[in-house]
Each structure stands twice: as structure tokens, then as C-alpha cells.
Image (tube, rainbow, N blue to C red; front, side, top):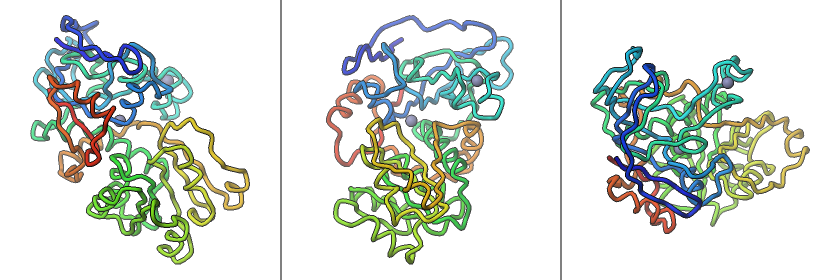
Length: 341
Ligand SMILES: [Zn+2]
Ligand SMILES: [Zn+2]
């Protein structure tokens, strides 16, 4: 079988290796069918992901078929279509005990701290694998993980119908947060980006107002759109140096608002205690997701997720080099790639 290895930042090898054996009877062998390409994979390739070590097989948005199941496996069987969780957690630490396994003290993340799914086969403990209906297209199945992030961060943000939401960045995650807020009944979601095509897509997903921050003043447009009240929740899914400061500037979040940074940008921001405490803001971290794969799979199976236009490029695994080419030279109209095996 073939596997994709980022040997060091900027250097990729396609290696020929044997199909792995099950390590024990609680594991399954997955034959990969679809893998999403995410911003964090770009960071692994470019050496800017603080959670990644090398050499590394990327890929945390993994969908495939159970090719072999150990004797003790009961939740899935050979031939089942499955989604593989990106998380392995210990189940015993403080964080695991309080239901926060995504930030387990010993968390291992497939595709960044541990090897991921950009290979034809790999093994995983069966408890980290969830069945998905055969009728879900593979390119949609690969989107379960980012949709689980949307479910997680909106839960962390305690989103309710009466919220007024601001989303900075309408790429994949911003679009999914938008869809999730609308599905939770939020009446007003304002999306902000520098790209008009992205903002048009956001309107199609239900954005109630859009702001182009390249040509418009963000705080004064938010002021207009919210009758001067500001928004109750802001998500920063743009994650560039200064993006968090932009979201937290006076005039965007209302008093008692919640701020949810979504990324891993390491650049210092210009945030003061006064910016937080004058409004008594909550700053709410959100990392990956916990316990959201199964509910998200159910929503996908029921056709509740609008995946149209989320994955904009489907790349055959045989041409996986293209993925890295596009990472170096992104096509402007391309948003998200999915590798199909
Ligand atoms: Zn991802
Ligand atoms: Zn733990």
C-alpha cells in the first residue's frame, strides 16, 4: 500500500509499505476512501502547526471501510462504512473525567501528534470508529470532522436562538459555524471576510448580513446591523495575526458577550484587560470536538447538513502530490480539498 509522509516541513514522500496488521483483537483495519484536507494539514506541511511532530502522515478527516475487525469488536463489522475519530484520549485524567476528552492530558491527535489517514490502510481501536450509512457519499463523509467542530464550538459558546453572531472568516469552518448557528435557530448571523465570493457563499448558507473587511469598517457595519447593540457571540475562524484583536475591538461584542477563537495563531495580539472586563466578556477556547461525531453523523445521514460547495476540489489519492502543489499555490476559487481513494 501507499502512504504519504511529510518527512519534514516542505518535504513529502510517497512510500510503499506493507498493509498493517491488527495490534490486538480490539482494533479494526480501515481501508481509506476519503480524507479531507484541512488548514492544519497546510500548517503541518509548512511547519507552522505547533502540535505537529515529524515525520508525520497527515489526515484527521478520515472516512473508510472496515477491511478487518478484531474478535472483540462489536460496534462495527467488516464492510461497514465508518468515520475515524481524530482523538485518542486516556479516559482517566481530570479532563477526561469532566467530559473534556478533546483536551485530555495525554491526548493523541491522528494526523498531527500521531499518524493520520493519508494512506491506503491503517489500524485503529474500534472504539474510535463510528459507523455511517452507506448512502452518504464519501466526499461528504470526509466532512464529518469539520461539522463536528461546528457542533462543538457552538456548544462551547452556549449558542441559543436569541444570540446575534459574528463570524470572522467564511472558509470551511466559518461556513460550518454559520450553518450550525442557523440550524440552532439564531436569527442574525453576520459574516465577515475579505473575499466577496466567500461572502456570497455565506449568504447562500443563510448569513443575514455580510461585511467585506477589505472595503468596509467592521465595527461601524456591525453597529448598523445590530441597531447599536453589538453581537452577543463572535467566532474568529479567520485566525491571522491581529484577527482576535479585530473581533474584540470596542463596538463588535456587546457587554456580557462571548468570544471564541478557533485557531492556533501564535502571533501576539493587542488585547488588554480593559477590553475584556469593561464588557465582562467570556473568552472561550474551543479545540477540535468531543462526543460530536455520532450526533453529526446522524445529522449527515438525515440530510440536514448543506455540504454543497464546502469541498471544492476532489483529488484522487494517486495524484496526492497535487494537494501539496495547491497548498503552495492555492487557486483563489478553491476552498477545501478532499482526497478520494
Ligand atoms: Zn480539520
Ligand atoms: Zn485523559
